[in-house]
Every structure is written in structure tokens, then in C-alpha cells.
Length: 181
Image (tube, rainbow, N blue to C red; front, side):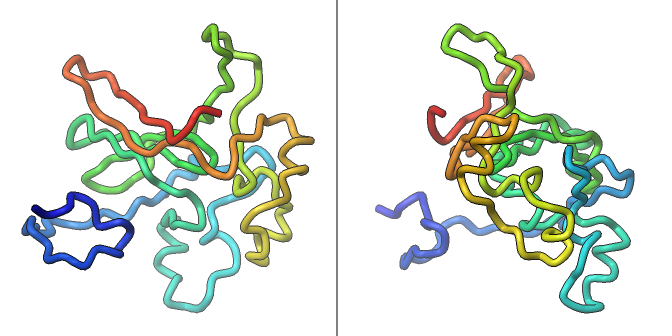
């Protein structure tokens, strides 16, 4: 019996599902939809390691320095919804081309009765808490908890955002959240 999880590359068993890459689409934002409330931009707009990133900069390619993508629901060949774990938020992309189709939408803080309290969830790794100068210097990977606590956002830490999506038979999306906040 073989495990169904590779545990982030720690598996020591032989792979049992053969796959074939039918194409790769880099998630990129040529229309400038992605930006944070404090004026932060995606990381390729800032200091990048060397000239090998020039194409990524031109295309505005989103990387793991921008989002921790852990949810994906493909609606059709032209529309998919991506869920970010650390902000947490969702945004739309074209899964065929990788083009971002919308700004991100933050996850609202909803009480046990389903009421929105006017705040949104955030984590220590959310760029909204970093200064532009620290992002440009690539020195702000996370802030102290107190910074988030003092902000207009409700701390949802250390992660706990979207871990997966599933498209249901009626076309709606079920979002799976890692933990209760």
C-alpha cells in the first residue's frame, strides 16, 4: 500500500502516478491588478537578484515572494480562482495563459453568526504591514505580531488561510481553511 502524500518532498517511496506536462503557464499580472493597500507592488517590481529576472519583471510574474498559493479551483479553460494562504485572499486568473484577471479580494472577518465586522484577516507575512523601503530592499518577510495586532486587520497567524478549493457540481467553490481563526 502506497501513501497518497509526498509530505513536501519527504516521501521515500516510488511515485505511482505517471504524469505528462501539457504546458506551463506563469501566473503574471500585465494589467497591474495586484497591489497592496499600502502601495506595495509585486516583488519583481523591486530589487531582483540579477538580469535573469528581466523577463519576469517585464511580465510582472507573481512568485512565492508575493503569495503562498495553496488553493486552486479551475472553473473552465479561461477562469480559475487562486487562494493565498498567508494574506489570506483570493484572485482570478486565466489558467491557460496565467494572466491575472482581477485584484485580490481579502478574506473578511466573520463572527460565529455570519456577520462581517468590517475587518479583514491578515498575517505577519502580509505585505500590507511592511514599509515600501523594506520591500524594495527585500528585508521584510514578516513583521512582529504586535504590528498586525495594532493594525486595522485581524491577525490570523501564523498561517491558517486557504489550503484548497473544490468546484462543486452547481459551479460554486468550496474553500478549505487550515484552521479556525
